[in-house]
Image (cartoon, rainbow, N blue to C red; front, top):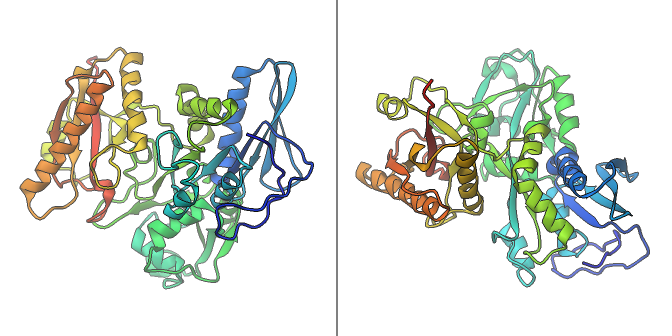
Length: 440
């Protein structure tokens, strides 16, 4: 891909922008977009990838502009530099569309309008363009001294719209509530706006806005009246709240609840490319990020790796005895299989997770006979319909695993019971993966 300057005329809704081709620093790879991805995770992935390819060390320096880094090394006895510019998810799409970025880092999925603008070059919703590099939980933060420990999504929306203005209304101290929010260019803001505010609430004008997750979290941790939201990797010294949706139990973001996307404010972190016809350096970085070593760096960065692990969930009083008996000799893998809109085929992440399950079995000397798939459905008009849908979902995953050389996996359906979201939430329609506990 030819290198263009970083002076780009304003995009005015048209796909083709006017680009000033002035002499400027050329980079072998440019990643533009999300601050959530670009602040720490993307530089760590670039560094890990370059260390595999180069003989020397990888150094980092700023560009003189906030939230930008240059990663430098020598490859084939030549200097090489990679730019990571983390100014918000929307800026990354504009850079990719303008031909400036090789990779668009985003903390939200591509919008339909963006995919349509880009369609003449590539389908950004296709497997070869859309790469889920990590799972994040949108962390709701308060000061460590705040006695409030959980709240519903609706309560959160009322707080950030200014309808609830004092912590005493929530069982906390008699203090005015101070709001901390990400800025309008942020994918974190887009996620919060979509999942919390929706069409019901509008952000209160008194909210303080931030480009940086880290700075927002640090300021909340120093303000006994504060509440804010950030990526999971930026919790730092703030207190983390458990969040509930509808009648489902409140969940704190942790390895299982976020990796499985059961946590109501879980989200996927993406890298988008212009299809598969991209520079080899960009293609190699994507492959590294999605692989075992790259996902280990994801975990090290504070986000949630997609490498499956087996854990024993903590059941609460709402867990039916029948489900306790069903899973009594099993642990749960930190992966759920979910379906694309229309619920007929597995989404892009699920298609890659098929390989991850196969690799997990091989690494841990386990067989397909150790697995159990449990399907779930959202609330239906009739219990038998929900049972049928949940079983068909599990059967669909079983067939997909068979094609990935994981044959004859046991499966069952659990109907519309044990929802993880409110009625109608797509998160309720899922297939969990359980594995037999090793005998001592």
